[in-house]
Length: 309
Image 1 (cartoon, rainbow, N blue to C red):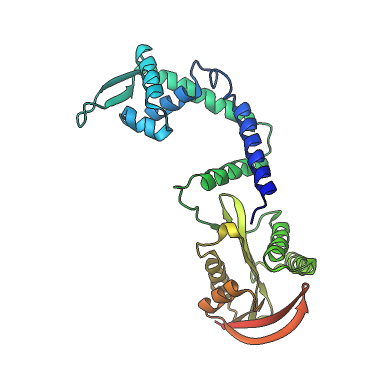
Image 2 (cartoon, one colour):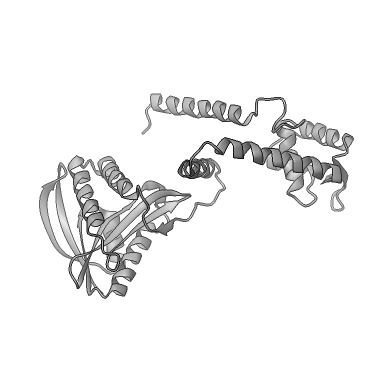
């Protein structure tokens, strides 16, 4: 539950970001992108350039513009020779709008200036910073656009920095959701360090799941011995849940283990991790042992699960 002060702080942060970004893009200027057009006029021109003979009503609905205000924009464009209009055959009360040759030239210049301004904004940033920026923008758009479909997760090999993310995300997630202390994060760090230092590419793998360029899940398959593999550090963060991502990660481990010729996969988990246990059971793992223990600041029941391949 959000505290009132937290909610007010977030509202203030979003308003501050809005002020920063509108200033960054020059939206507060009378014209945008070194053009004679206001932001609303530029958006109307964009819709005209990217739709096939739209009606004024369609553009107004898309941009949520007041009909009277839109009518004045349309009339200005007609007077300037930028657009033509004619009644729609199906409803003569509605007007079909099209850019003229002059209008297409005006849009091309506007579009080019917009491109160049954004390129200039990105120029000082390193490639990794550009990826972070565009990923963050995509997340903002998806969270605020209710009709946007959820993005599907992509599974990939780890890149530099991902191992540190695994340690941080595991520690933070289990502290937040189960109250585990920092000794669990230390255990994860030890597992990750051993994976890096003794990695056998022919017998071991790590998968990172990401959505819009942001990591949201991970899992490892490591060598126990020539016949037994271990599934370790399965995690799906809240942003990646609800699309069967945990099942996908486990399935990747099983398929890779079979391809490597392992005869069995084993894993150690805790009885309180009900979501993970359901994934293991659905994949074909069987609970073979359970033992109470005191770890990570909690009284837990450790469980060993196995799957014969």
